[in-house]
Length: 68
Image (cartoon, rainbow, N blue to C red; front, side):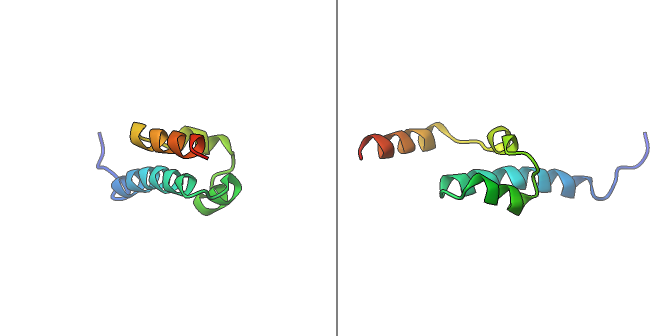
């Protein structure tokens, strides 16, 4: 096995950073098309696949939409 690329850790961090950024942008109400342009994704399904919400966030959202 050869030496590891010096950029491998950067690529991993960049990958997960995209997930985090997308999740927070969705949480503050940014439209999916805008998120795709910011992150450089080509397909709207990436937002569904790459955003991660905690149970706490889901419950807060449910309370917000049912209280109005």
